[in-house]
Length: 247
Image 1 (spheres, rainbow, N blue to C red):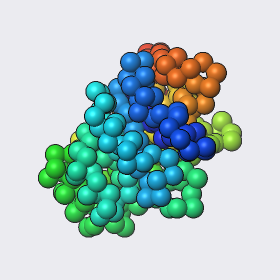
Image 2: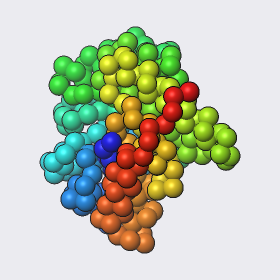
Image 3: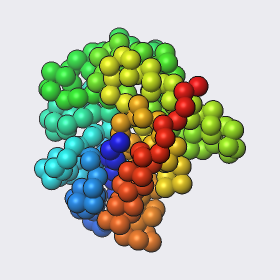
Image 4: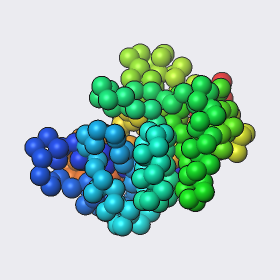
């Protein structure tokens, strides 16, 4: 299992006062040196954290894999085709949300999203879709030609009881196993932390995880490089644990 580090909230801290520090581009380079296998950033319509300068510089300096999260709009598709990230992840976006609140409804936008995927593929950009761990959404992701499905782990991460967490974990496992039968690469993300990552590591169908806020938060205490290294080591350890039993 590989770790992609989301640097959005480095930019969030910067935007709290304006100016240039802390710099998400510098953070991305540190994350790669600390063992991250990819860098994620979300260029929102309102540019609340990551901005156009950031994504241009990230494209120049990222040596592993740059994953640009974005809404499936004409403007964002144009930016992606100009920028040429290694990967685009299509996500839902609402101005009033604090962070992405759930998965993209691929089922109800199948025709339009297939067109978006085709346009991005013409530019030789891989495409991921961020969806709920629901079999119909996973199937729709394959149907529109996505290369990767990223499963929304927020319900698991926010579970308030162990029973609910287990239910959500097995829902993620079932969706991941189904995605694998469809030939999709499987990622997961949202709300993952140092405290809840190990059970996700035991879902061996999941090949990548995207983590940002938890790493930025820990970096306040131990530094950014050490925070990334700790997560990389935790994931490696978790992958050695017995796989989660099918259910």
